[in-house]
Length: 208
Length: 208
Image 1: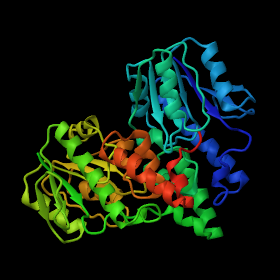
Image 2: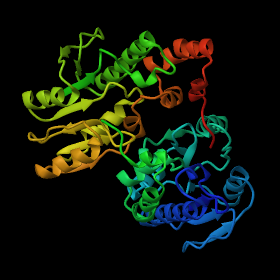
Image 3: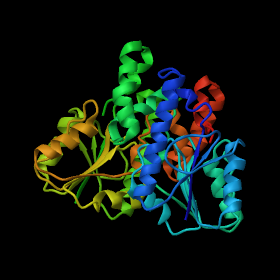
């Protein structure tokens, strides 16, 4: 199975700007990418990175400066199905989650992100192509139906939680066990105390 | 298996106040409760409601005016294990999700909510008791370990997404298929247009 992890190497995780500076965001994004790559390897895959610029993370990297949609569609066109695409900002994913995605048994297994995006998919239908713009989860379901592909939605919070906003960081502290969680505890939390911005509350668990 | 759905019948879903008025919140909360009860029945259970005041939803209701923690602990003390507790604000849950929770095979199956709460659990250990205050997911794991119970975390966004805030409503529109989704499309969206508050953007899917 061809396995690809798209990664924005140019200016990653801009929505974390209220709590992490440019260098910190870059290091945190690389830590999340390493987590995703290790999880994929632990699930028996040999992932490749599809990046907007060269990045050194101990995996083969293809640089494609196109936007996400044409870059992923170029991968789908160039490789025989099945193709597995997992975003780089999913540090909570564990090997069992990946197995649920690849073992779903339909032509397209989709992992929705919070808010209606698509955080990962496993496509076994050669005609399926992506369109990541605005609410892609629903769009991908419609596209699959249009090319006669069956679809399964993978019900996983580990796949649903792309780490984008300050509020998401608490989830990494709660459920993460890899590089991103370690980085956040060591460097991110230190950062927080140094700055003491209001957003730092994002790192405290909420009630219930 | 004894199955309980705790429900705040007094003043439900106050955090939705920016987009729904008191009566609307009450009707929406009841619609979510009905969804959860129907899903539990479809998974083969006979759920009871544990409410802070009488409520008419076509299921047996026990009224307990205590806070959530002592009320749920009274249920755990009164019934032989296993006991399944599922919150009322999880309208995305489907029967398969419930089966993953009850079939997890450990002494305690925990479904974390976003932010570190506990949205549902299935306890097979007689000594387990809850404490819903502040970051209960981690606390429940520790408590289970302290009484020698094995724990599984159920990886489900359908169980993780308690519908609390305006931003959560988009998830109901995206993934819901029951009373809550219908109510929101019919009455909630009408409400939105009437008021045209900035929060209404909560009902639009975000990019990717």
